[in-house]
Length: 132
Image 1: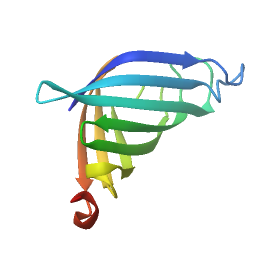
Image 2 (image 1 turned 30 degrees about the vertical axis):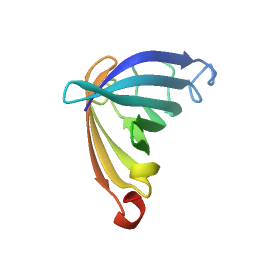
Image 3 (image 1 turned 90 degrees about the horizontal axis):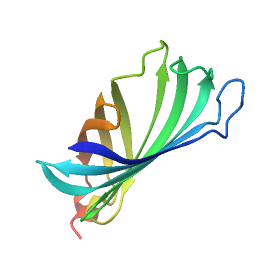
């Protein structure tokens, strides 16, 4: 899948000296095999680091994929020990609805450009739940 940021909102509601508490809100359009497939909504909160950007910092993120046949939720924590942001991020699948009810697994996100990424999800579905 590929994701393209349609809307990015930065909320500077964090600590003025460290940036801790600052939030990033994204709405991404998702394409699969070059065709529109859904939307991703995500929110990240800076939980450690410094205000200077780019800077070493830690974020806690969570999001939801809205697909035509259900939703998939995820979360992750990132830590950038250097001034360069991470290029690859791993996410944990925390659940889902409809076809994805009871989903578990993981995902890998490769940040290809500002606001752009390729994402690979590895989902395990419980047949007795997802077969509805």
